[in-house]
Length: 114
Image 1 (cartoon, rainbow, N blue to C red):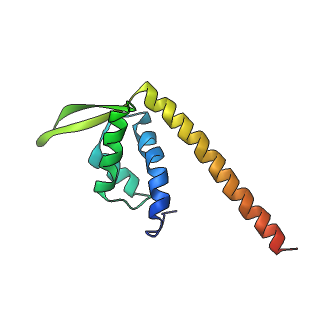
Image 2 (image 1 turned 135 degrees about the vertical axis):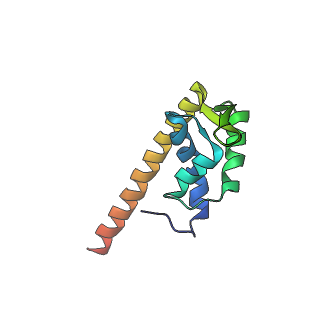
């Protein structure tokens, strides 16, 4: 299910989690990350780079340049051990959030049916 465009605040809250998931098993460059996120969550390229810069600054990622076929070198992002720890933390928080929203919805549906 693709998120609707009116969910900007919601998107900001989960974008960090999405980016770290995409870096978990493979180094990627910014535009590639944007395209992958865009498949499910509408996103402008400009929304991603502040997060990536902060991840580098906070030690969650490191960068390196890699030559590309037919173009300039690309800056790749690689998750660090600290980034993997942060991802695990965010994932735990996300799962609790999802469970609590589902519980709230279920309780309200049950009240409506009484």
